[in-house]
Length: 363
Image (cartoon, rainbow, N blue to C red; front, side, top):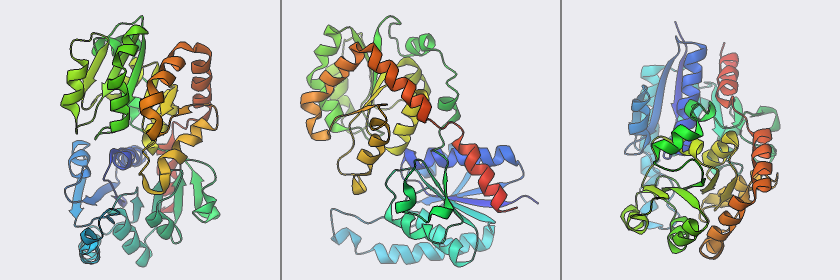
């Protein structure tokens, strides 16, 4: 009889895709393992996890709303209800271990597992740990982290520096630059920039590009532009008729975008930083300024401080971003340095490291 493991969390791709990568690695190591995902109802994991071939159960849970006190009134009731739902899931599924990857649903699932002495594992993708994970870390079996120096958040004897698991298509880099550029309808003899601000987009990045879009063409640069959903149509109009620009609200084949690009403009979510390091792309990060504990700046600095990337503050993007990107595009020496340092820092086998440790702990 195979082991049973619950993987809990989600909310964003930065939590969901590492969770799926861990699940795939567990199944690769032991095909008899049964995996059940637990996520938050109406969140992105309810769509993405079944697409990856796994079963998921949604629970009624929400996080603290930092902008409106009134919206938090129902939070204690949702939390209590989530524990009732989690208890039913555990009674039915009877897991041998639980893995939390961050997101609202991680907390009640891991808390309940710990109360029942079921081995619990945390994957903290950011370089600044979230409050829930810090609380859960005290009783966790093992805590997987992306970077050094996490002893300030977690018990040192429980930490394993694994890196962040990424999708196999990105980690294996199996697409040629020529094929990738052809996919986007762009030319192979020009430097190509990839700009992305996450699935919802990044207003400061989009507006900076839109405001100086002519400068890209003047400097013989191409652009793959993921605008995000919120104001996609406005930016598509800005790029209309420009043969040096591919624009859409979302890039489903993100491995193609990395393969085609020579440098990247990006927010600094944990997974974006990890993917950029693994693909060894020179990058200019524009951290989202309202992220909890300013964790995106901390994430970006893990590369910037190692001379593997650049950082432009969100408030300065309009004035500086495009000029900095053009300067980097023209500075081949700096781009090579950034790439070399990214390769040195990248951890490509995080999924296997995590899977092996979990299986060793629950033998």
